[in-house]
Length: 342
Image (cartoon, rainbow, N blue to C red; front, side):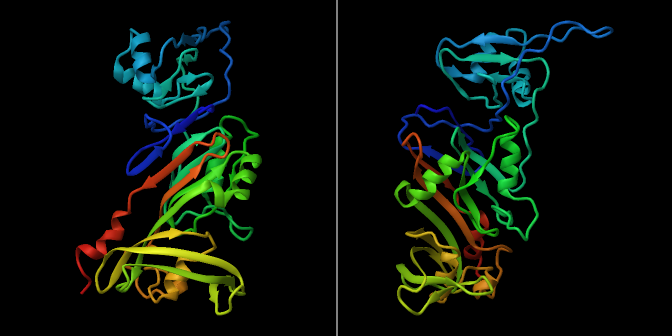
């Protein structure tokens, strides 16, 4: 892989680079502007600032291991604290990851003072970042992108603030969306060029989009396929047209994972990616998504929409590397099967 990449693998999410023999497991990385060492000329009445120390990497190793070897007067916990405070950078980029993989020829800079605060995200977590894309896990309730009628915190707005820590001119570009009440894995581009590549070749580069859905009632068929033509009415509600070729063709495949007489847990594979596609199709077969009042649900067993984007697998738009991001099924989705409702 020619480009530097950073991956977060924390909590329940699993991130896999399919073409790599060794999985990279990172926790958090914050890009920063290239920094110029502070002036060592003392100001009247103030001690001279301590200049940063530079260390050259001669062999492949992990960042924490490297720092422990190089900084003899600091213990392991003290060095971890330096990392978390943003005092360590690699090639001018602040890194807070203990097991960040270093390569020969790179320069590690250690400063006495904290350089940057890692942004605090609300309702999202970064799973992977490189020069071209950011992959996140979004919680239910967070908008992906706001509409002109909405002015609130979104995944897009938070990530824009995040990338501008490195450069105020940096931007984030929308590739696809998840509904506000749908949780799971989604992706943004870091340039308009990459956005266009991904949107124009979406059907070719996306290998798998897999959801889990908690639906009302017991789905009798162990698996099935739903195909229809979707349209949107004046109330901005999607529906399946009774006429062929009338709207956007949508195809959804499903498989039953668990069921009882009240609810079913489905694995849902999207062949197409239309607005509200799964929600409409589940309603069409008489098993609306739990908590989805808009499309006919009359229950709310987990106090949220029972839809989670579990897997996103695609070919990297510039490197051609296969990437796969997977998160576990939310624990609340399993609650209806632990104890049947009375």
